[in-house]
Structure formats: C-alpha cells, structure tokens
Image (cartoon, rainbow, N blue to C red):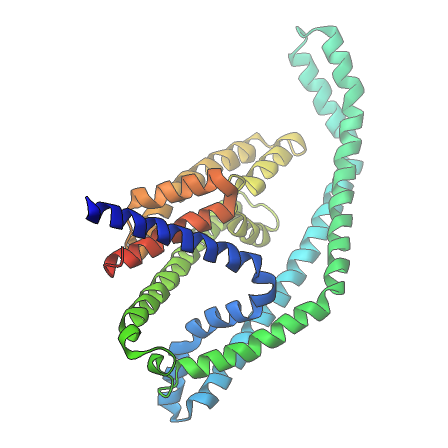
Length: 351
C-alpha cells in the first residue's frame, strides 16, 4: 500500500513539475527564443560538424564556424526566397480574383439565371430575395479579395518595422548556435564539470533520452508534413491548379494547425471552382482528395509518431485528442511531451 502511495506521489510530483516547467518555458520564450533555437540548431549541426572536423582534420571551433555559417546561409536564403515568392503570388492571386469577378460578372449572372430555370418550383419570394442579394454577394467577394491583398501588404509593412528585432534574434541565434555546437563537439566539455559524479550518470541518461526523443519527434512531423506536401502537389498538378507549388507548401504548413488543417486550402479552392469557374469535376475532385489526404493523415500520424518515440499508438491518439480539446496546438504539445517525458522517467525507473 505504501509503495502504491509513493508511486502516486512521484507521478503527481512529476506532473506538477512538468506543468510548471512547461508554463515557464512558453511564458519566457520571447526572451529565450534565440537560445532555444540555437540549442536545437546545435543538435542538428553536431554530426556534420564532427564529420567535417575529422575529414578535414581541423579544430572543432573552425568546423563549428563553417557548419554554422553554411546552415544559416541556407536558412536565410530559403526563407527570403519563400517569403518573396509567396508574397508575390498571393498578391497576384488577389488581383486575379478581383479582375475575374469584375470581368465575368455577366457570366456569373447568366449561370444564376440558368440555375433558376431548373428550380422554377421554388417560392418566387425566395428567388427575388436571391436576385437582390446576389449583387451584394459579388461585390463583397470582390472586396474580400481587395481586403486580403491590402492586409498582406500591411503585414509586410509591419514586418519591416520588426526588422531590427528579427535581425537581433538572427544575430544572437547565430552566435549562440556556434558556441553550442562548438561545446557539444568538444571533448573537453563534460557533465562532470557541471554536476557531481553521483548525479552525472542519471542526468546524462535523461539528457540523451530526451534529445533522442526530441530528434525523433521533429523528424516524424517533418515526414508527415512532407507526405502532405507531396500528396497535395500531386493532386493540384493533376487538376492543373495555378500556384500549385505555393498552395502545396501553404497546405503542408496548415496541416500542423488543429481543426483547420488542410481544409483551409482545399475547401476554399473547391468553392471557387464551383461558384466562379462552374467546374464541377475539379470541385468534386478537390473534396474527394481533401477527404483522402485527411484520412491518410489521421492514419499515419499516430503510427509514425508512436514508432519514432517508442510510445503506444493509443497514448499518442489520447494525447492528440485531449490536447486538442484542452487548448489546441499548445495543448497537443503539452500532452505529447507529458507522455514522452513520463515514458523517459519510467524507463529510468524514476517513476
């Protein structure tokens, strides 16, 4: 009985400490962001740095400098190119939508009157109400396109005002990444220099297991995002949808959002092709594709995450569902890592 009580107390203490750590981490992320990113980047660069150091027979400090500069050059180049392309195509998409509506309003009206012939049995009052409101609908749709483009431009202007902060974050992240990478690949740095010998082994095991879990967790979601991106790119390419690449990238990123997900891209596209282009085939195809991609996502996510983390799929499903209901994306992160760290401490016989 005492053993059961002690175990419950240990688990309760673990949950309390984990919750406090989680809340403190996210509440202070604005101040610690460069160093958190630097630590993650250093984990990514550790192996390439060791490889370059051994192959070129240079010091860890120099190889860390090389990998850090190359890594940040690639990231900044990709982000700059991606932001530029996405912004240009988003503005062009808004302009094209507005232009199409203004030029083809007569065709839209004709389509409406054709539909009216098929539904002559409707109440005349309903038909008259639809006719009166249809013009307002077209105007509002056009205004939405203008508003989206305007908000995008204003967002870019706001982004320009935050450039000093962004540059500061990049600068400190770059420096911290270099120092973290250098220290991680240096044989001179040891846990024993920071922690007493009797505590080193257990803390080192927790650190190594946590690092492995974090790497596997990140890799699993990168795989999920890549699968969603490829599926969407194939679908959009088959239906010859414009801006297929940009929309696929956006869809892959939206896939991380709870509830909304890829529906934020698929469903508006389906509505546009039905209401504006009168293309029932593409509309139906997009809806069917949306269902298939969503089903595939729901099937593969628990399996990929559970296999990479070594956790039972039911535990992953429970974490996703409870976290989503509790607090959306933050709730999912909280529950997933709660299960992950519980599993780590359980393996080390600490719970």
